[in-house]
Image (cartoon, rainbow, N blue to C red; front, side, top):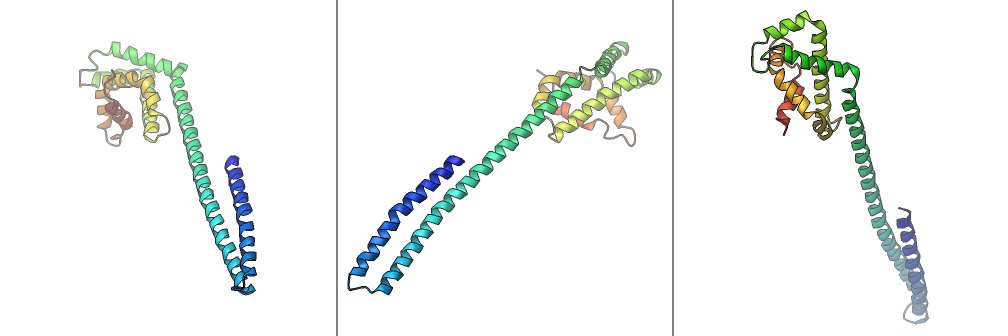
Length: 213
């Protein structure tokens, strides 16, 4: 930026240094001739200076316009990079939450539920599973903590608050496996009045991602 201003100043100086003596010399030359009186010469000189000033301002205006445009582009690029860095930070922070004791315990409870409730994936009858959760409130709380956490992540991805690629790379398999396992349970919950949108963003995200490779 400073370099552009210096170049602009140098060009302006060169322009004035070359043109002003030329105008003065031309004015003196015309004044000496008998064909022009002093008033005509002054009109000519004034017009010449005005034209040269206009040209100089035009050159400076174009350079200022280019400078402002480049400055805006630099600011935009900086803001976009800063926004992306913040999205990445939030994404990695979310991933790190799943290493905390509460989430580790919820994932452990989910794995035990898969073993204790047979045919949970294939069987569309979720009553035995719901009965198990009603008798084991801790398992119910842990399972819902897991699903609610996934729903929150899906909403943040939809709002572009976090980076989808980072989350997908780290959690795709876990998301999809839990979605497939609890698909019938989620559908049953959504069938209840007032809960039609329960975990819908999590479901939509898993469908968009599809089966992991």
